[in-house]
Image 1 (cartoon, rainbow, N blue to C red):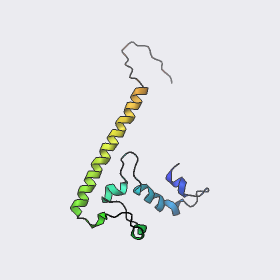
Image 2 (image 1 turned 90 degrees about the vertical axis):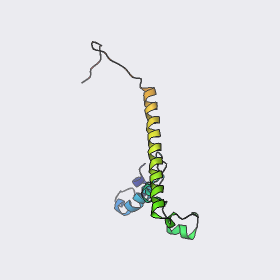
Image 3 (image 1 turned 30 degrees about the horizontal axis):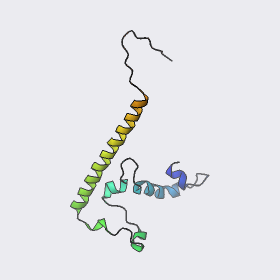
Image 4 (image 1 turned 135 degrees about the vertical axis):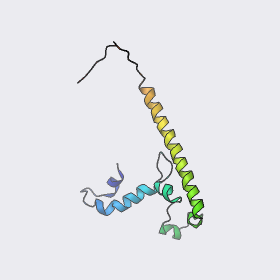
Length: 115
């Protein structure tokens, strides 16, 4: 089920009203492969919501640091996301290769050709 299916009603007529919330949900959710949210990759911090001011769950506020610290945090997160992506791609390739052994053909081998 896609994110929009979770937000829109059955008639699919209110999708424009729900688009902002869906985009926010996508951008602030930690990606299963990269292990980092797109928001963090861009801003170098997790989003700070109005409810965070009322219920202080995030005791360390990352918006108080210097631009240089934020830049370094973004660069580290990008490196981590790349490592995690490459690791995932390798795992998927290894699973595919295990199920689909390589076959080598030589000139003159008979093969089935389907139109």
